[in-house]
Amino acid sequence: MFRADAHCDALLQLWGDPDKDFTNDTIVNGKTLQKGGVQAQLFAIFDPVYLKRDDGFSTILRQLDLFHKKVRSHEQIEYMPGQALTESTTTRAIVALEGADAISDDWMKWRLLKRLGIESVGLTWNEGNTLASGCYEKMGSRLSNKGRAVVDWFTSEGIILDGAHLHEHSFAEAVERCGTFFVSHANARQVHEHVRNVSDEQLRMIKEKDGIIGLTFYSTFINGKNEATFDDLAHHIDHIAGLIGGEYIGFGSDFDGITSPVKGLEGPEKLPLFIEWLLKRYKEEDVKKWVGGNFQQFYNRHIERNSMHVRRGRT
Image (cartoon, rainbow, N blue to C red; front, side):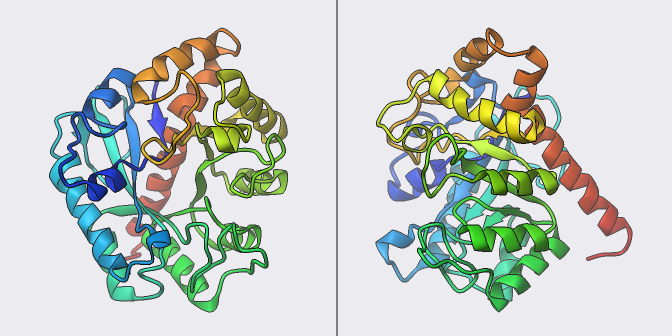
């Protein structure tokens, strides 16, 4: 079955320690992706805003450079931006940007990132910026004028908008305004109350937009504790499937970015064990959707829609 992961922070780890490589030193690496049979992996580029550095765009470019130098060069990785996802023994790498603080509405920077292969963007991390409100803002707002212009540009350029980390007010307007929309890594707030999880209302918006939510393996978002089990994660699957249907569920592990993953699911190589557990409790057709089939269809719909726009003369 097709297997996909909508979020990892391996590039942040490689950037943080130049001695690390993509063979052994990150949780998501060539070996673990192969062992887990992961056929599509989103690699997040993240300028750690909490460090309050003043070289954000340089950090983004350096992580992009590391992707091409250390990740793309690995024999397990395929890199074909804008091409449909198909069954493969290798792993398709999709590059995403998590947080746009260092870019705002600088169109030269956006055009450059588009040319360098960025396919998905989240406007904020947890904080607010000049484009939108992050989920930790107590008095969140809708998109700013700059944010609306940037989202419109994403739509025209075929960039997927990621709603993870957005405040609910910015989230709502982003869904209304954008082209393709998804949430790369979050869980259901109704199951566990956490500001980073999404509400039932937001889940319904994802369905209306024909998007997808990647359930994260971070225990804090699953049950609020330092340890979570397969059963705990399944509570989120059950709630979302019951509310909007199983066609909108995927996985966004957040490997290399979390400190307390689900017990028994500490890396991509453990994915087959989780799949085996799921198959004992759910229909095979549903499990196939959740572990990657839904994401494959979501991404391929986006690619086809974008291709149609290009054929009609959009540039």
